[in-house]
Image 1 (cartoon, rainbow, N blue to C red):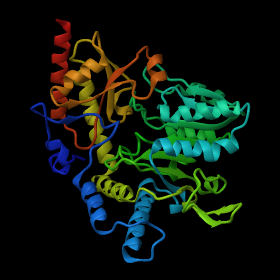
Image 2 (cartoon, rainbow, N blue to C red):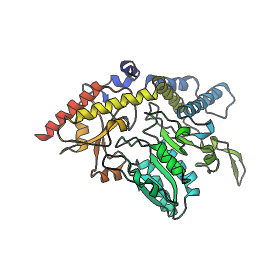
Image 3 (cartoon, one colour):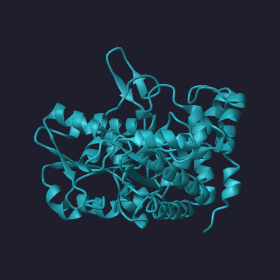
Length: 408
């Protein structure tokens, strides 16, 4: 399916900007995406006409705000094919969602001598919390290695899923290599040994269709701001039985049923894990973003991004000194990380910015992975629904000029 790119691009006001006299070419979508006017308008309208705190007031606009917030949850349920609203918790983002599991599930279920299995391609958000828990509990981290093309080496999976393994926490799509991992196969292998699985879907949710019941993950975390929505809100999906047995992450208003001087009882799901005033307008924006993505179709978005990645990888081979990392285009989400021989990634990004081109330079919150690749940093170009081949051409032309400048 061919996307109506010009129509889509007209929905994004920021794409009309000029940077240093050049049209903005935004290729840092793996970090955060731009927002369509449908999202901006939905949030603006809510603040103008319906804003109030939720779940407490019986007056009209409070009831409207509550309905808007809870309809956003229903949109998430549909988007990821959860069983019910009881399985969808709103958080501030992927990082908080993973930390919620670390505290509310991990502290109760991980003991001294236990093992937590991760992969060598994890973002720091799905590595540091487990480092902290392992240190606190006397547990051990193990890692599924990657091969030379940036795929997980699943030949070692059966041995790594040992009787001591109490959790497998892994990324669905690598934010550095672009690798789309075969999560359904890996989850089935873990479940065969009674091991629950957490998926970091920060790079998956914006780009590919998700069915949590089909893949049968136990936990899944993602952020709104990477999928056309606002910052400050994200999602933790978890199976209801797990959530029922977990203790609250934060204490305060809204997450309680009754409060006495010395004790309290907890609210029903999902309120048990949503203490305090929530990001209400941001939930409205997230719902609008989901509706926008669904109007295009997640499969169409994925195909569009893969065509851009394939084209980009072909064009990058024209640039002398470029080395790319990760698997072939058909096994990737919409990003390419690379280095340019003799030029620091920050210098590459700075010169591209002179041409209005936004790319990411650094370790992309995957320092251990970069060190395994023999790198301190790389350049990353990442795509989304509004990017075009013409933008890729501008990016490649500017990169060729960069290579010439530093070759002199």
